[in-house]
Length: 241
Image (cartoon, rainbow, N blue to C red; front, side, top):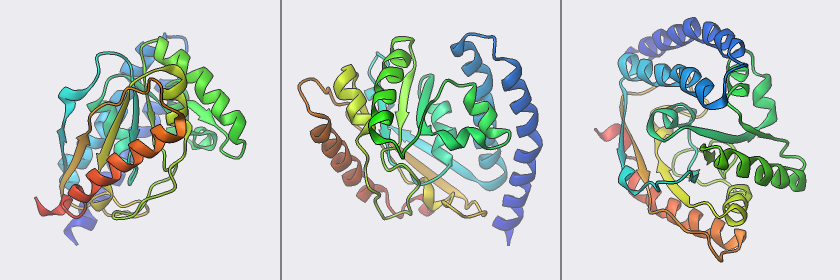
């Protein structure tokens, strides 16, 4: 019951601050992308802060010292909406490869649209790969990191989705380092659940991979194996602390 009440308080607080941020984001369209990012991303940071204060959803990051000095491509496990928010507080300024329909979501989608995402149509695979490569190279060159969730949609804790090749394709062709990331957020912030549970989410930054000389398919398999192996260490631990 307490978790339900805390989750209701969180939902109400998020509903109060989101519309003003959305209108602010649209009003900032004329600013350079990195300036827009610095301002708009404070919404995501505020949301995960609210989740920590109101719902007890804490987090711990291991391996940040492994991050390359240059803009890189993060290929991460995807269990929850939590990482789409918290990564903005954890990693350098970033853009995401995401499905275009997310931009149509009222308020939240408006803000996302102002953050220079790589918004693809997953139904057109060849076109999506070409767009990811072209826009990904441009974003990396402008100093942004690129975040990709290769499973596409959120998966339940203890399971694995069908890893897509887009992020590895970008890395192999752009020559940018790949940073594999494991995260067990779904144990506290369920994929389709309203209630947020107290505990500590682990974000594990794995050893970066130099894609030089690697085919996208081989790179994708390597990242998937490393992330899924790391998940064996994290599964079931978020609520134990």
